[in-house]
Image (tube, rainbow, N blue to C red; front, top):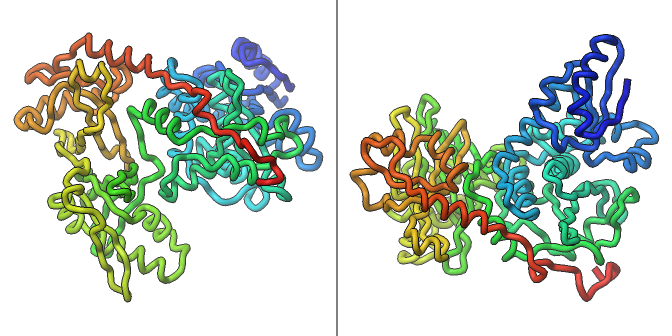
Length: 524
């Protein structure tokens, strides 16, 4: 039996489908859906295990008709078992749990974009040069399970998550001129009519290699290198497609990052002397017109437990060298640099010295005549202004966290009235760094006695409470009161922060869009 159902009818039909399958156990049962909008993992859990579901997502009937003349790949590769679809939707629900329903379309899209590229690794290979199983795992929604994707997989997952949010999104295949079937990307259509491009594949590669980027390429570069294939409805990118300005991107990103887990930019440090640790790239700071890469490093003891996270700064792209040095895919000179990086530059001794004496500033490392040299590239007074840890805390269960104060707190009227401090908390959880942005009236740097209190450490800053406060109270922690488990929460502060967050619906204005004006396609 094969049925094409609308999503609402699918959920209502599950009991009938199960009954039919029980009555016809030897007959294959396939359900065809356009997407999974409105369908939960709980709905799928009620489905008979022998029923399969085809979720078209980007492989719609037009692509099947045009490209599936010989092998049927576009039709068959997006057929999922009950167990696969249950886990896929569960992973999407985890991402969706962080979406503020009040956000604008572009906030939701950029939040999903960030979650995909920070959780799923770009991998080489596709349907042409890998096994069918491997190809399906990285070219479909199964990338959410394998945590590996090629361009098709990234674009399919992004479209599916946008479909579930009710946001119009196109899955597009094409490539450079002369290579019209070599790449996939997305076009997002806002309600106001603008078409914005998303190439998460390129973003993910830059993210993994720790290349500092605003997440977009030039609109002209995009149009030149992204020629839509013959199955696509939208073909005149010069006329129809827009980019978003850097300023608008930064404004939107700042509004959606109360919580972040660095599932991709995390690198194991394994030294010759047996000392191990984990290095995570978390961002950058601009100092004297020079970009400093910002890291959090956590040493590991002999039992695999993480020590207190330490904030570091370097002019070197440390994570990129560690990543590709570990893979051992470069030449001899590259491997020498990676060797010195791990065993001479990023030693426990040098890291501890930098944290204690130069606010975590590690300088610039170079190899001259086979010897490692380290240079200071910014002045001492500016080093002193680098954001650093103000509290290092160890809970009774052995877990450790670092608190840093963000002095660049938004200067709007609500914060001036509330006089809140903004803190960033870093903690290693299950091998990955987690970052929380929280707020409190308390000045943690001056309340040394309170911050050593067991109640403050184990209850006020418990992982469960931090997660709950970020999710429910916009990160507002309140004041710690000794003996009171949850501290003292000012309800009006919570309401003000939540009201502020609801008002912070960052949408795009006409001046935020960049169009390929003044040129035609042949000039690009």
